[in-house]
Image 1 (tube, rainbow, N blue to C red):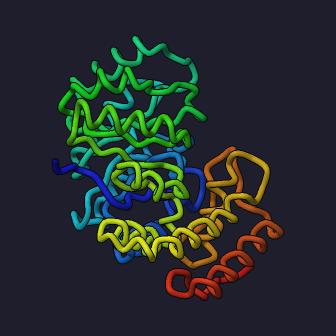
Image 2 (spheres, rainbow, N blue to C red):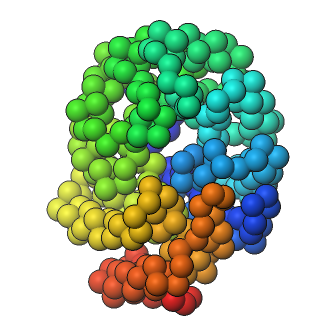
Length: 313
């Protein structure tokens, strides 16, 4: 059964130059970097894209400018998670007008909802959506899971086309695969945490929504292609490089360190600015130097994937 979304679909960082405007040149470079790196799609306005911290006008601008640059070369998906169903629908319609392939929805945050409420909410939303919907399980931030029983119910809607799971819970991921196999063989089930992408594919997953692909898309594309072609003897070396990349995300002590590390590395690689949406701030010089040192080590160890040209510490 053919699945709509598979492979490497990075959750694109949102290049910013200040709190309410895009780093337009950086956005253009980033999108070209991703497409040249062989990704199979781009996910706008996800967690890595700092979507909840961006104003609605800026979110629409990001969709507009990204669609212009992508120019229908690969599909793009747009996150519409919000505390307001009205705003989710507004953004979904805007995404549809700009040529998005699908929208992505996590559970509404702030007021935790029960599973019955969640199912009703998604079904009401789907009835008005102009695009297919991918569910996004992100319980560490939303405090609510798409429980397996809820997935089984929601999978009966033909407009819901799959799940991105960022729980990091491999047992849950296996249950999602079981729901797909039993109810919706055409569903795409994608892994969020990038270091678990290989394990997810071994369990039947369709690929990964890997934040690290913002930096080294070809590395993750190679992982996927080697797995699909059965060249499994080469996978440990690629997985080793992905594991070593995780050092960047260990810098800093706040939950925002994952986004800070990714944006810092992108700026060191000359891709885009590392300005973060408030209340967060970019890494200070000591942390930035640590990221630069990691990038240099990775470039020395894995020259096929990591660029030796680090702009500065």
